[in-house]
Length: 151
Image (cartoon, helix red, strand yellow):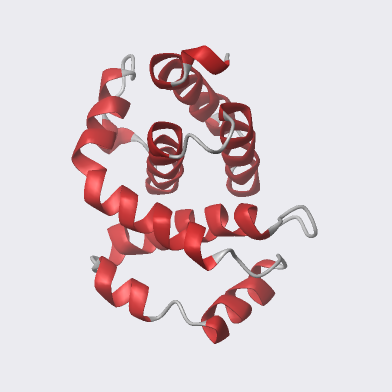
């Protein structure tokens, strides 16, 4: 993980991706996850990731939003894949796309360019190959659907 590039909201996005990945892999439920989002937990995960402590409200907003709207979010992802199925996408990439899509659709207070750039940077911290470009392509397509007035 690159150090010192993550502010509080950036850290919330990174942690959301990590937690959503964990939820998918381990079958954890949102209520169990939200219970453990204490200040001590956020400080510890920040230390491990070498980031600032996450904005707890933004982290909770993303986790709750993705969980509540996952079927619609996954449908949007599927509709914008060419030659791929959602299940063929790496679990980390799915977590990145789900988080980013939630923010693109529901967080109109955050500029679309900020959202896309943040999630591309997160993808680069996990992948060195083509995945960041793949994620960027999908986010670009979907941002034109939901936030075209900003582009």
